[in-house]
Image (cartoon, rainbow, N blue to C red):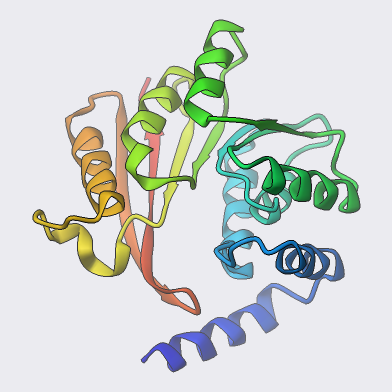
Length: 221
């Protein structure tokens, strides 16, 4: 089945996400820098871009930069005065991301903040930073509940919140899992279910990255 999933991804990407030399360069740079190959796929990146456009977002927060591939996809969906703040723990990853963002000509609208995301989020709250229109959570899964909590504090009614990798090959149904990533996602779901200020759902996906999925929600008024 995975071979079929990969073939379908290739078919969709070839038709709807035409080859982009800059994005190809980004993935090549990431590989050369020994970054883990866990970027979103091209069709997932295009989905993020379309969600930014459909929302009419001007301010985007990304938690988990890696090499900036998804960051660039989203930035391309912003208006000329739009801005992304993206948070990355690893200084090496952040350095690669900044080079990739510069290569894409998007340095004027993307700010990479390096360091522990929870500390960065707390600092942004202290700075009384303007709320975000769309927030993409794609970092270490054990901290997903804390990322959601901060996202709600840095949002406004109508903010779209997206969480990636929230199916974990179906392991989220295993309450006895010893995988902290699975337990982090389960707590993420439970928090959303108990939280009255966000309406959300999750979708299972298959593709070249295997069996996973994403959560999408909107902050209530």
